[in-house]
Image 1: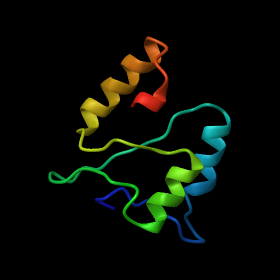
Image 2: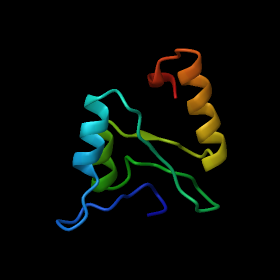
Image 3: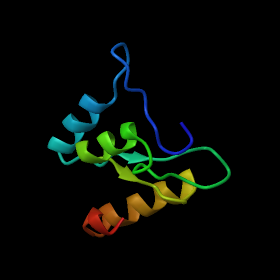
Image 4: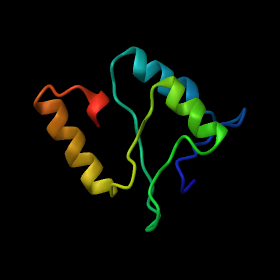
Length: 83
């Protein structure tokens, strides 16, 4: 799941969870623990589906930086479209 893919099988599908969170204005950030290249959720169909459901890519940010950035933006009422 390095590029930002998420589980999307019949048994375990995160897309409905992302859609529900998005409907409740809860941000969902997709990140990776891979050391190189970061996340690009526009690469594969599953990532595109997640993005269309409302998920936000953490791009090349580390998980720690992505978390702090999200906290800063939420705490300062910055629109997440600038994430």
